[in-house]
Length: 217
Image (cartoon, rainbow, N blue to C red; front, side, top):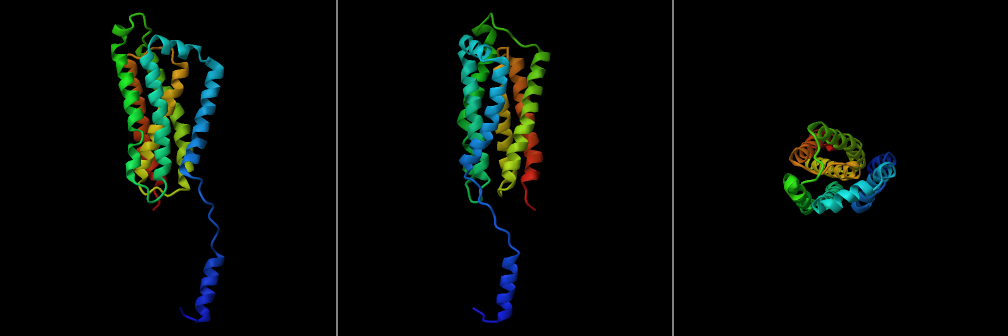
């Protein structure tokens, strides 16, 4: 090691300009923080609409309850995977974590195409009412996505597009879960297609915009 005092002076000068970096909380803790925001929205909706309508729908068509459980599971797993992938060195295999929940969500929701056969007296949404569902999911996904992107900005995702895609999936699944509280119609083919379109819009928008926001050039 050189004993030249100029080298030591340079090291001291560079070190003096460094600012301390606050350690990020672990991914599971940041996931809980984001889920707390979702829980607050759920509490506000429950205060306004109550849980009776949702529970009656699930009692009349149990597959809707399973679909809601799949959406909640997708929300949790996609959010956790996004925060994990924000840590350098983590395997991209974490991106598969939401798959089981998503399969349950999609599979149980698919029974809605048989709704008129399974439950002839069910209430089916019109195209206009299905469009309201699209607006609901997209509208709630915007602040939830923005919050997660903001939380991830302090991290360093090495796969920004993949991470942003998971952000979109988590936000869309959370919004679909929240919709269950005030959704007064049973799922039918048109309703399911509208929900799928809304989720696709949110995921694609996050992959495009969130990927840029999470990139560090």
